[in-house]
Length: 298
Image (cartoon, rainbow, N blue to C red; front, side, top):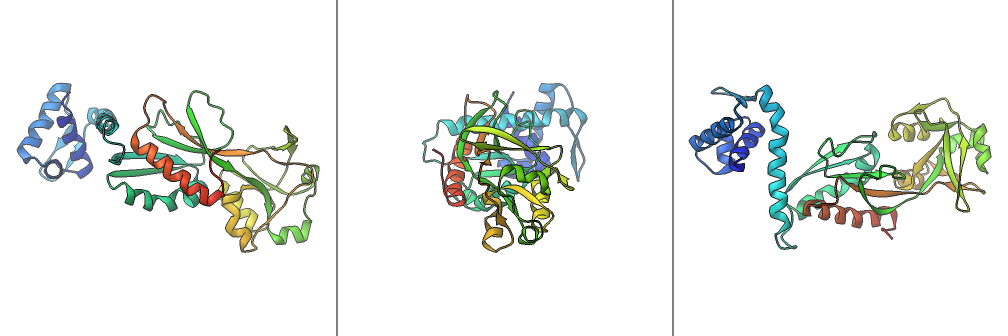
């Protein structure tokens, strides 16, 4: 399959017209039209509906289009793999992260990364659910948790300190827990379907049952509820640093235990080939994390 023909399809769909695709590819409109026709002949199906004003994918075209994009991305990655190491990177980089981590940590570093890598485009997917990075064509997932899927390739980027937090008003009204068992009598703000928090003491993991009147599927929602004085939340230090500094939240250390240690991980769909755009992004994120967490990877 001729990748020049595939490129016409992708550019035409992104730009909405064959004329626009021809301009971006630096060819005559008639050449672009011939290449698209050649691709349709190769596949034996019509890929697009064409009028004088608009262009849209047929059902067959919509099914083929993700593979067309992947072909061009793989070609770009292949070319990048043999370029000098100081030549930078190019292409679309798809990254996924949780909503709060993406908003507070990842997004602030994007401008600098794009400036340093002018040929790279970034698509940041923020979701508090675990995304299937293989099925969705994600280049890199940033996860904060103990990793359980051993079919993926993961690299530890930095520690992720966590603590219990509450608003000063909550502490004034209900007191602060001194030991892990004290949490049983406090209002705890937990993720949906979470009945226990895990702690660690002397290398041993233990669980404490928690209850509360508010649960949520979003860490951001729990953070907001904690700021409003509804209860105690288990949050990451990078997510609460500004609130603690401003006096909106206070940390609640326990005398006999501490929250189970987590880390920030870079997760790749495969170890066969990590494109330069991914390597450069991870390196930039590691430098950024050193300023956010105060610690880098071991």
